[in-house]
Image (cartoon, rainbow, N blue to C red; front, side, top):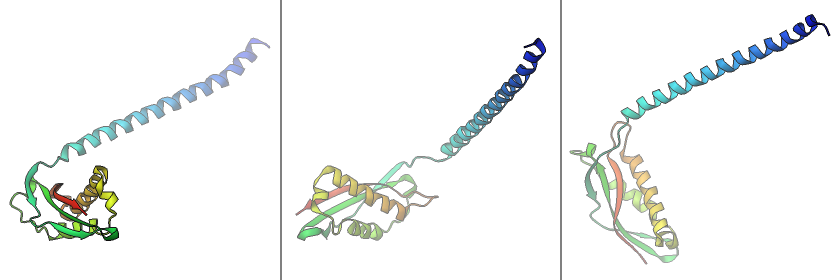
Length: 152
């Protein structure tokens, strides 16, 4: 092979290699810009969202008694941990009581006899109460505490 043939054969390879390098650099630069924008726009959103601060605790004054499965029953009471934003707001607890009754009625006693079962059900009830009382603008409820819990 003559020298001219070698140079002619290597030029297309080097052009292909140059194109691959350019494409890789552009792709990496685009990915870097995208990551930068995503990270910094996310931190700006996170800075505007604030964690709620604990306020007063509103107890449900009367214990609730509900029928569980297989003839068992549960007597329980709970209190809601309100946020600082809820200060001065009159909160009607009727919906929270109704959600509590609906959440526990018909449950298996076995679900409620373990700490894990009680915690799971408490978390589910808290989630429903938060959906009922909190809006995007105002967060009134942030926690739920059992004040009585007896099964039979």
